[in-house]
Amino acid sequence: MSQPNRMVEGKVVLVTGAGGGIGRDIALAMAREGARLVVNDIGASVSGEGNDAGPAQQVVDEIRALGGEAVANTDSVSEAASAGRIVQTALDTFGRIDVVVNNAGILRDRFFHKMSLDEWDAVIKVHLYGAYYVSRAASTHFKEQGSGNYIHMTSTSGLIGNFGQANYSAAKLGIAALSKSIALDMQKFNVRSNCIAPFAWSRMIGSIPTETDAEKARVERIKQMTPAKIAPLAVCLASDESEYANGQIFAVRNNEIFLISQPRPVRSVHRSEGWTPESVASHALPALKAMFFPLDRSGDVFTWDPI
Image (tube, rainbow, N blue to C red; front, side):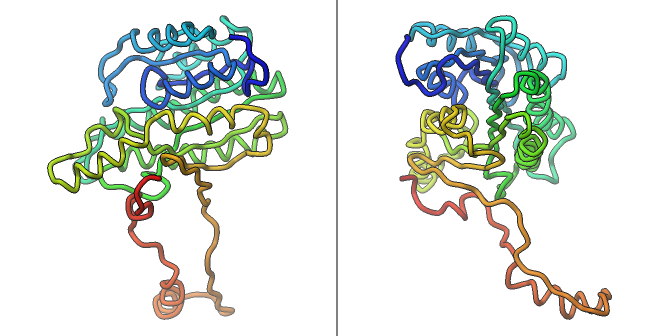
């Protein structure tokens, strides 16, 4: 599988949640471009139940069939010690680690007023704690070698909003802030950190209702957005070709790539004598109201069909 000019030739890439969906396609694309892979997946259901070594090993077998190098790991990202073992697998197998792709995730969707503590904890642990634990375990090695690269999966459910996903949305917006903090803290060590908000048909959104004709048509449009569409951006961000990209949030929707805005002041009001609750009510809020953000969901912002 030795070919010239491959974008991540020789890099050691760790992809969590790589037994299927987006993670699998990212791992395969990285391998095709010359990377050596740690394929991490506990083999759980979408809701995080159970475990199965099969999915991770199957992707490893696919990579090896392509002539690539890969090793499977089935440790959970949701505990510090096991996340450390995922990173250690890269070091034990390949002697280094160059790229971490934080992709592992589960869903426990529920409207907020019905959400249980377990549903909150489970999703936060896998997504936000998982991204932190794996990133932190790799950070020492990145610092020592003077290079490293993080690619985190965020979501427009957190960046914009969605129904019934307070746990998932909070975790995914937290990951965007985590990525920015890593970028700021570790740029002096030549370490980068970016986010991708993927739109893709996978197990994670396979439970969308399809009862009406409109819902069925919508799902058919979503199915065009295959997990493989996410992989080219991930590979490029993992490569030295994108060395100027750091602390950014991207989104991929079928054949579109977006740069996502980050919170900045949009309007201000000032009173030299200071504010009282009454003047806030009569002056500040009315003056700012024109710039208020509507209660949009992701689908309200991305209103056009995938192209």
